Image (cartoon, rainbow, N blue to C red; front, side, top):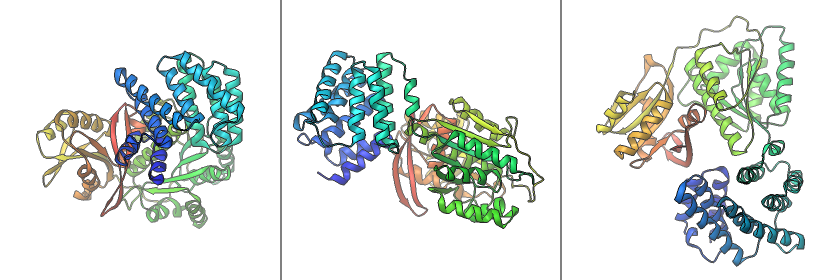
Length: 491
């Protein structure tokens, strides 16, 4: 058995990329392994994840397959991990008596010490889950709190446990609010005005206090001079990871949104870039524009939402000097954020007159590329317009990425055509065919009946299109560097 492949599949499963994990699992031959406990346990995990995304008879059948895989693993090598999962699946499938019987066996194994070597966290979390299956809520709460204390920074492990407990409590008809106290730290999307008033000490303290109160473990946003940099510094001082998303190249952003306020801001900007866990820039943009800022904010907000969902935790937004009645573009994004139940914290701050020229009036479009056929007319009928002919393919543009995604899903399914999508910001006065390059690269990797999206469009939909799910399919190497593919799925 290839252990590296097994670990890769496990990593993908933990991150939520179920389809990609299952495809790798099958391709490796692990799915047919009947004499390996690790492979059988992983098969149970992946099949259970697929069952949770299915419905009706398919869901029941997948639950049955998952339980069988876990029980086969336990028969080969008695262990608490496959047994606790088999017990939980029995409960989810409606067999509470069987779930309790298996849970009792697990508790006896834990008490006797006759179980597989495992981390302190997972042994205590397993005890908590077994207690929960018995309906012993108070014992489960205590055991789970002990588990979290044993590994306070194992956030992905915590998230997996919380996700499982929430399912169990929902099935038992019990409240799950007590799990909130054990969530991993929150994600924070931050942005604010660039030009702070000279006497801005009060604003600095207010930003620092707000960040301390929200206590984010992960911050996502830009680094313009002023409130952005102050917020980012507070996140880093508080021990949070900083993830920077810029609306143009680093050099252009440093010149146009940082250096205009002095060398001190440049030094702080550069230090934060070195400290940041990740730094992303919008491709092919060498000027800071309103359209680029809007697109970068969508990417950063989508990243914050993805992180919160992956870790089963909260997501907040911090707006500094940005009012609820501000620019329509920013208001649209904040409304989409709040529509998903995520709160926004606003701080007042005064802007001094800008010391730079107005940002250029770029625009943004969702681009779909597909083989030239009657399907193009269907996309046009759904609100798109033909933007260019690309040999045997056609690029169709949409002003709204959500409308583009809806049209792409319907057309790809009904017409059985491959479609690739991207979301771009560009200068309409100098627009060339290069703005279709990413969508065309993605389209070339699509298979009939499937919609693949660029990372930028997938993250924008995480914010604006919660009706969709986008699963990563990994990267492909291209002349433009590695390109991340995301498959579009209706929730």
